[in-house]
Length: 556
Image (cartoon, rainbow, N blue to C red; front, side, top):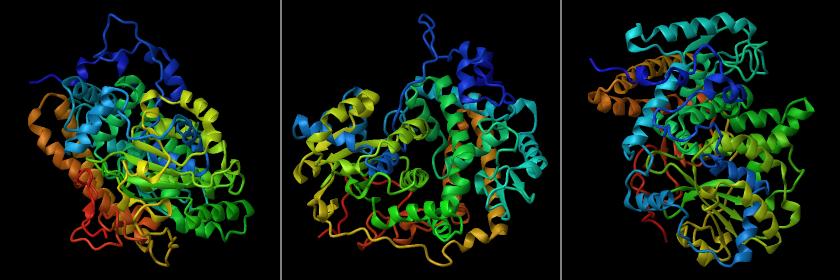
């Protein structure tokens, strides 16, 4: 019988599932100080330095943040250096990514394009993660025991869960249903922090629940690989980063249980509240949506979705800090729905036309550095800063010093439409920027009844139960894969597709409709149509291939 991969790992590598690790403690405890990934060169001293990474949803993060005028800084730099054209990226990794995008093959370091060492790192990451979640070895007994244990824990603690303004509604989590009066609104990640516990401390079953909630329609392997790449394939650092992200999503920002679940309709409700602060936050959030400070539209020449940011529409102090942060996370999560395996990064175009110092705002930059650098890794494909004024030269030099060289290499400055069109086809650039696309952003507000399915608790719970079963089978199959059973790889791929399709079945019961749902960019079942106003024979499906450099045949 093949030996389990878990048994080959140093004991100090495995994070005890009942230790409830926190980010600061994880870096300082003897457990992590003695950890050495299985594939490190033992001839070299081992360190636990946390690497800087800005990527993943920094893409959209930058969008909302730059919309705040924050990343206006970028734009300044190359205005002084002269016109920018698509430069040769620094480093072989970026060159390989460009080649892969053009050929349509999986990008390096992604599922389907891993070196033997990278696949071994991915497997070791899964070992550590499943152990952290408290998932028992196949030899330890029934895999479902952890689910029953998790459910019992959640049910026992529902009476002490901190209540919020939605505490009268009921929603089941992926691994447990909370039916107490004070149960939080959570959908897939309905588990909440128990009152009296440190908000940075979550039990293993809640970390597990937060992870599968975060996966959504994504490939679980692809999600883990983002964190591995962001931490230079250091398993320990990637694990610490991932755990911190799950806690941030569930306990601090409440991404799925609040921001995504309530959405624009929730902001509209808040804007009519009797509470002054709630009313202001709701109004300010919607105002940014109404004016189109930033929006997702179309794709660049590599097939990446684009977030356009009109920096001139931001004025420091016009919106509350909390509404800016909420808007940023909302934009990021909306953009994330447009990604898939073949195109897993996005592009940002910062339109600096008519920019002035009044548009500058440092607070969003601080928020981005604090939250998005760690929580949305490896999603930034390219940042295009268009028509930046010369006054930002010195600021750019400072900001550039904060960035990882790989990230800084993705920032390009364009002075005119000819230079910008080297990254985005003229047919996909708006006329207001000098392009050929006759399209204007016009906000479509929430419609009455558009979130009616979210009230259907029976269907939601049935679909959640189905997803629980798929998750358990995926974890079991993953354990078999870790033990060396190559024959299960096909079944594991099938389960990955089933998880993705199952998410879109659940989506209308968990996520409030967005502007992008109302305008046809996101259609029921996860279909993605970047140009819904044009007639197409068949929309591009989320999860299906989008050819690199694809251009719609219906362009005038």
